[in-house]
Length: 354
Image 1 (cartoon, rainbow, N blue to C red):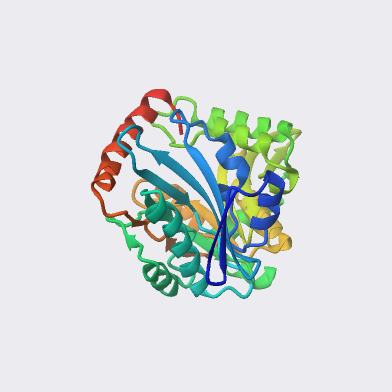
Image 2: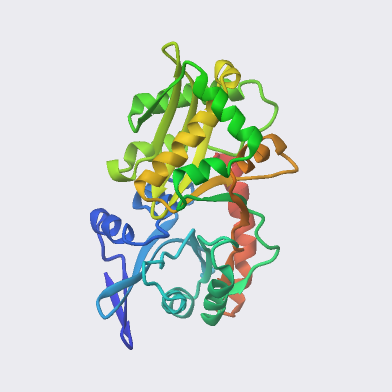
C-alpha cells in the first residue's frame, strides 16, 4: 500500500481488499460493472495486465476511486494506465472540482511518477451535464483523443412516476407491450446459474447460423456472473410460455443506472412480443431498485436499425459517451504506446482474449 498526501488529499494505491473496495465504490452514484473488482479479475488477458486500485480522499473522506489497467512496455519502459468507465467521483453532493482533484492525483501517480500515458474513458454521456465535466477534465490537463468516441446509447429517465413513463412510450411500442401483456406469459427474475443457462441457450439458438460476429463474449459475462457477489450480480429476466423460456434480458443494477447488457428472443418470444414485456419489467424493477437512469446499451441506427427502433421506443434520449482523454509524460517513450497498442490488438485477435 502506498499513501501520498497533497494539501488535504490522500492517494491510496492498492490498499484495499475485495470487500473493502466493493463497499467503498458502492457509495458512488456512477458505480458500474466495469469498476468492480470481479470484472478485472475475470478478464481473460493474455498479456497479464496489472491492475491497480486507487482511492483519493479529502480529510479522510473518499472523493474518488479508479480501477486502473496498467500495460507496461517490456525493456523499453513506459506504457499505458487505462481507466474504463471511471474514475468514480459522483456522490450526492459531488462538485466537479472533485473530479479535477482526483484526475490530478491519478496524473501525478501514473504520468509524473511512473512515466505512463494515462487514458480515461469516463462514465459520462452528453445528456448528463457533460460540458461542466469536460471542463473539469481539461482542468486536470487531460485532452480529448481523436477521433471522437462513437459509443452511443439511449437513456431513459426513471425518476418520473411509472404512469408517466408508460405514457411516454412510443405508441407502436406501447401497443406491442399491451399485446405481450395479453399473452400467456410469465416473467421471472433470478441470478442463479440455471437462469443464466436458460438465457445462454436462447442466445446461442438466436445467433446460430448468423453470418457475422456480435462482438459480445457471452462466456466472459458468464464467468463474471459466477464470481460476482450476490449484491453485484447481473439480473436475468426470463419470459416463459407454457413452461419454456422464450425470451431473456440481462442487466446490471449498480450505482444510479441500470445497464441493459444482453438479450435473446426465440421464435415464440417474437410472436408473443416477449422482448417488450421484459424491457418494461426491467425498467420497472430498476425504478423500484432506486435507479435514476436506464441505459439501453449500444445503438447503431445505420448498421442495426431494428434494434435502434426497438430501444428508441422506450421514450429515452439519445446520448453519446464522452471520448477518451489522455495525459502523457511528454517523452519519447509515450510515442511507443500507439505501436504497442497495435501489437496488443493483434495478439488479442490471435488468442481470442478480450
